[in-house]
Every structure is written in C-alpha cells, then in structure tokens.
Image (tube, rainbow, N blue to C red; front, top):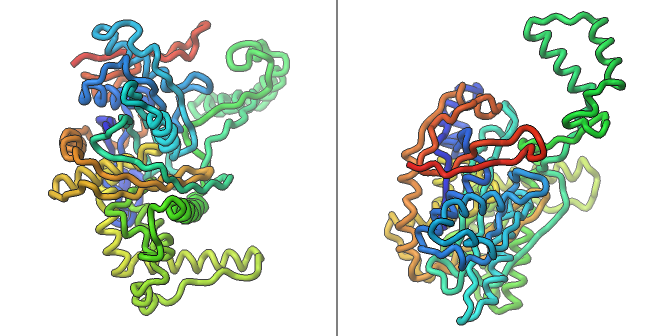
Length: 510
C-alpha cells in the first residue's frame, strides 16, 4: 500500500474559530484534529499518481508488467475521459525514459464510481482478475483511490473535509494481506448523498452578474435591467461557449454534494448491519465460520476496519452490529442490566410511529456505545483505525484503506504481533451500498508497514490560515501555497479552442 496526502492542512481549532463552532465538540465528539487541503497544483489525478509512483518505486515494479490500474473515485475530473488516464499520463512521463514509450500501453485502466465504496469495488474486481493468474503468467494489478472531499462553505459537512490518494498492489502471494473470496453485500437505492447535474438558466446567469455589479458599486436601474433581460432570447451569446447550441439552460456539476447527514447516518447503519448479516450467511455456507460454536462471529477478527467519513463514525455506527453479534450471549445479560432491552419494531407503519421508533433506536444505540463492554471492544478492535483520519479528514473512497494503514502502523509501533491475524473490513458508499469482507495478515507485514512512515509524514505538513483556506476552496488562489517540489503538478487547463478543458500535468523535479 502507498498513500499521498496534500502538504497543506487546516487545524481544526482554527476552523472552529472561523465558523464560531465548538472545538471541543469537533475534537472530542467527532475526533477531528485537522483536515487535509489540496494546493492549487493538486487534484484527484496528481494525488493518485503520486501514490502509484511511490508503490512502483518501493516495490521495484517494471511498468510493463502492470496489467491493470483501476481507480475508485467520486471526484472524477471529466464526464467521459477516465481520471485514471490522467494518472497514466503522468506515470508515462516519469518512467518512459527508463522503460520505453510503450511502458504502460498494455495496462487496462478505468474509473469506478459508487460514492465512497468505489475503491472497494475496484479492489474486488482486481482480486478476481489476479486470482486467475498462473505460476507461468503472473497478473499484477494496482487499485488506486483518490478524492477531494469538498463541501459547501458553512455547510454542516464542511468540518469533515479531507483529501488524499492511495494505491494498493494486488498480486499472488502478497506480503501484507490475503483477502479470501467471501463478501457480504447490501445495496438499497436511496438519496442520502449525491452530486447531481444541476440546471442553470441563461437568465439566472445574467441576473447574477447584474446583481454582482450592483454589489460592487455599479448601480443598474430597473429599466436597463429589464431591457437586458428582454434581449436574451435574441442575443448572439446563446450561440457561443456553453450556450453554443442555443440552449436556454445548461447542466453543471459541482464537487460539493447534496446530502442529508442524519438520513445518511441511518442508511450507513442499516447497510452495514445488513452486509454483516449477508457476510455471516455466506461465510457459514462456505464453512468459514461456525456460529454454533461461537455466535459472536466478530470475535474471530483481531481488528475491524471501517469506512470513516469522520474519525469517530465507526464508534457510532458499530453498536448495531455489536448488539446483533452478542444479543444471545452471557455478556448481553450484563448490558441489558445496565441499559435495558433494545426497542422492538412497531406493528404500525404510520410515519409518526416509525419516527418515534427510530428516535428510540438512536437513543439505545448511543447508550450501548457508552457501556464498558462496547468501549472495551471498540478500544481493542477499531480505535487504531481512526488515528490517521483525525489528522486528515474524509478521504471518501480511500477512508477504509487509510484506516487499515493507520491500524497496521499503530500496531507496528506498539510491537503487536499480527502475523496470521484476521481483520474484518467494512466499506460503505452512499446511494447506498455496504460491503463486508476479511483479510489475513501475511508474514511479511512488518517489512511492508515499516516503509510507510505515515504519521511521521503527516507531521511535516504546512498549516494554512482561514484566508488561504477559503481562497483555495473558492478557486481564487492563483499560485500554489507551497511550490511543487519532487511531485506531479497540474500546470494548465486549456481554456480555448478544440482542446478546451484539457488538463496538462508535469513532473516538478526537486
């Protein structure tokens, strides 16, 4: 595994001061310490390319042997051209001198999108492909995850922002982790979080410009405004640029999502619980677990790795699975003695009744999350995964893999012997889908993890102030805050002609 995190970050205390928020609530309540912020020259492609480059160099890979490069992202740079091709372009620039002009020509690339679970999907398809390797013809695949988790300024999701890219080397006989072919899935089509193409009329664009002119001290009388709006149906403007076909409106895409935080949390909880149930059913059929011997199937996992939209999300989400897994064990008698029995589902489907039941479920979930039994479980199985998330923020498709890296590096530093240990992994993507699978830690894991230096690298980042943060967020910052040095950089986006929108990248030597 490899990861690349932007060099810039905003301290959560600075952010709390900017928004007049309670730092204690953000830090102690949600686990947020800092958010990674991409610089002017960074985007989804550069962050992904940096991670793949680190993976190739560290493992001394010949690019001509890499058969596929699949990218999981929800921050794609184009509606048709895969962002993975931009990554490949940068890698080609970097390695063509050593391996030739055609060094990546036979590499299959594609983007996979399903909100935050796209990289897990890319991993599973690549595992299937690599599994068909033979001893005479080894298949080597790279799974990339890269995202900029960006929300509207002053929105309820702004404090969870983050960014970063990463890459996973998938091949036979892995040195880090084996992933068995046993997956639990839950998919339900919902609108908890999405990025729609939004309709913008020519009239609204012109009206906004007129309003901006007035705000800037250029008064425009009502008669002039009316005359200008009346000219629009006959204006030549509609035959140029984004209105080139005479449309009265265009559809635009924004990186900032439409979302309902509370509804999304419920979708996450339900999908995770259902995916765990499907996993246990599948694992029993394949003889991987025996619930008659021990109904607590999560006890076989030494660590549990979760998708983390914010650091403490797993702590809040997992009580449902914990309850389901232990409700018929002696431990549960102790839990019920402390907080009572869980609420039962109502017979009525009346909306008010269901809402009251959901409120009671949430109250019980919170009570369970504070019991000694659950806190001990969380501390031993989940807590290490949230440490890096606290310092980076949401990585969308990469957050589950960041949690895995955070856990493994923390265990390495603490001298834990994980060889042969089973990890449970749970990814989630809004829309909504959850996947549960497991990994077995390989004998060479210490050598792999010792090369990451994840937490050491995070200490070397540059903090930015509120003014710089908002300029970067709004796209007003023209020059990079930290000059690109020994990294890939976006150097141009073509603005005119047949190549309009083309993104050009370059390696910036140290």
